[in-house]
Amino acid sequence: AMVSMFAIDALRQLSFKFLEKPELSDFNFQRIFLRPFLLIMENASSRNDIRELILRCVDNMIRALAHNLRSGWKVFFSILTLSASDPSEKINTLGLAILQRLLDEHLDQLCRLDEFNDHGAESKSDKNEEQKQLSALQRRQRNANAEDFVELCKASLSFVQTEESEHPLPIGLSMRALCHTACYADLIASKRVLPPVSGCQSEDPAGSGFTYDGLSDVEAEEMVLWRPIFDGLAAGICSPVPSIHGDVGCIVQRGSLMTLRAILLRHGSLFSVSQWVVILKQVILPSIQIAAEYDNSQVTKITSESPSVSSLDFLSDPLPLPPDSEDEGLIKFAMLSQSEER
Image 1 (cartoon, rainbow, N blue to C red):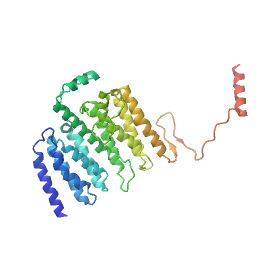
Image 2 (image 1 turned 45 degrees about the vertical axis):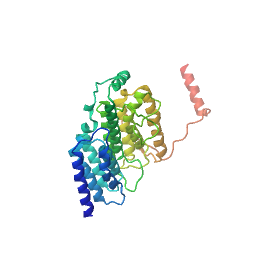
Image 3 (image 1 turned 90 degrees about the vertical axis):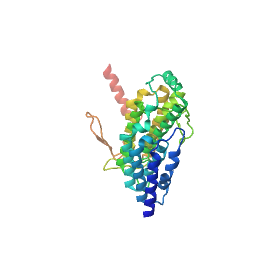
Image 4 (image 1 turned 180 degrees about the vertical axis):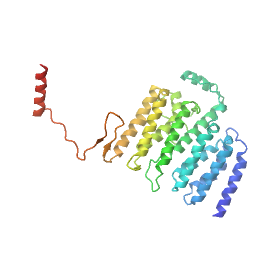
């Protein structure tokens, strides 16, 4: 045990020395050098205290050297994603806390907007013209930054419980992760994160530039940033995992639906008609349909949100079907109504 601790500490010290120098463009030395941390985290037989130490090393490196991180972000996001599925609740909590601190303190180092000359172009033609003015190096860096942001979104959404597990995540962590997605949507809308300028595809979900098909090039590039958020929330909506706290059920499902609704209400004007069609057909409608099919729980009560409508308790027995159109009582009622009109 002590040997493992000393080995990881030695690796941490070497990593600090290595990360003190910024990585040159078009190189991925950081990703290669930091990979041992990921391999240890992926080892199912490693002890809890070893995995916890890995997370604390990641936290320390982000705090001290985030300004020099480039390709190393991908390794860190993979480690944080693994922490969401860890059987230890302490590691789950620590992983999400690192993501929260990154969101609060290190977004500027991750987004690196100072590398690009963004003049706030609004129209599609302006955006196309702006992209043509980027150098080849700037295009590669912008694509890499967009890819890092997508991995960040996926890391946060991995804390939303979407599959049944022997070690379910605490509901509080899932709800905090949903709050992260709303922050990410605000970042995209405020152009603190810029979409990629090339390399879009709609076949490989694990590949870079994954977006929706049936869109123009600019629309597809914009949806690269939105897709991990929408897909993650859709997975939360149709999650088969029973998330119950007190007398309230389907908390994660409700929270995912409310978050998606809030994002679309807040930023819906940013999407074109074609993008809205894609969101409806590939996100909203399928997720609600699957959620309805999964939900076989008995409804016992509806609580009204309207001050003018009281809460209604459902009857244990189903209500009778309405009478047939040839029902004698209905015919008499119709005749009576006609006579009164005359």
